[in-house]
Length: 314
Image (cartoon, rainbow, N blue to C red; front, side, top):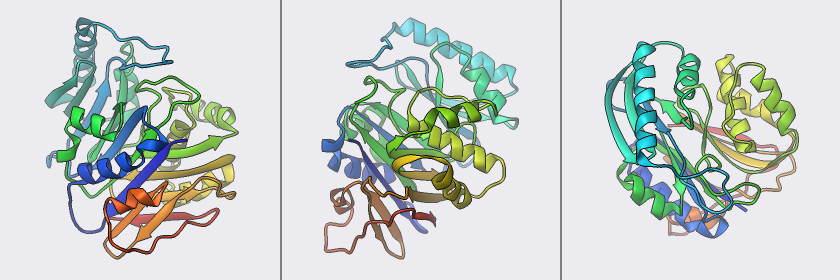
């Protein structure tokens, strides 16, 4: 059992990090092992790419990964820096957030797939997100722990999605946590609750098109699937509609791009989702208690119907 949440403000910027933290903390009972945030803000106002990445793992019970010495992380970071320069990019500014996690602003104007493959050729290195407005952070602990660790309650933006995870089929570590970036498409992220029954068939098809996977989580497959659709020219809504035909299983997922938030529910509608919608705010969660952190007053909510796809713009 996991919890997902999302919100989008239309026409205004708010403390999006704090709002999503409160929503996910309310869903802690659905998954306290790890928490992830995909926050959409204004970038650095220079049009540079924001890259969140890690060069190692933070691990807990059941993970096959290991914690390593800081010197190992530092050496990998130096390799990443060299690759960025070799690819013709430049680092505008950088911040080390934990011994294994970093945030870079980068000037780069070439192919993102080539860039991503080169960066991730460094041992144990994974790009968590790459975009001009997306900031994707995930780690071990509940929403308040992760938010405090990375200073997320100070991030301002327009929309966000997040996930609270209870580890069932894999260990507790960052690589198994959600959300997932839609490699290699800029500013796409996905959170998901459910199971896909044709995961491996779809994964092999995407890998044959050059896509990469960092986990065996079906949520990552949805992110890469949608990124590939949009990279091929489809709109977000069309890609989501196609997913209901081509992805088998029981699932509800949220997807975000630089200017939109989408929701899809499979035709069996077995996984919960509650929706509130007004002229200036849309909020969704696995349970209404998440929405109540934003709107404690009496409100009208509803459950999206089976096979429904909705997309909202900022």
